[in-house]
Length: 127
Image (cartoon, rainbow, N blue to C red; front, side, top):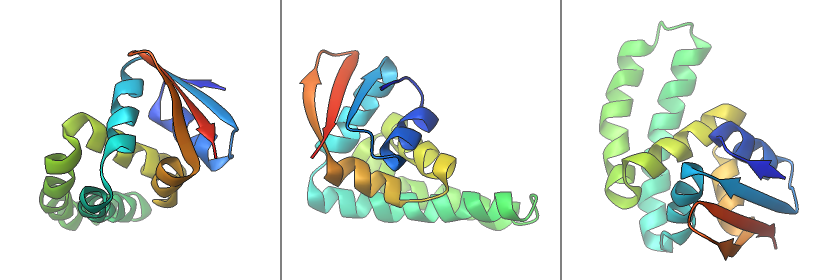
């Protein structure tokens, strides 16, 4: 399956696709997420979790939780940005929000192996 957006990638990972071909700028961001070391990933996923739950809280209340979510976004994203960078952090958050689950990021990191990397196109295989 070929994907070009965070939502498509999150959907493919959620459905346990055997092979996922990622094209365009998303390929570089995905490599960054996959290449992050275990200790650094713990910091990043903690920060992403804070932002994710802030966004989900805002969506679930029709905007009533926006002030609290804004504080969570501002404070929570710093750790992830320092580890992954702005682009990969945004991608990770977008993926989690699109399927309403942080587990998609864990599955991407643990269940898929990068088999081909040609810059703007990568191939992930499920292990």
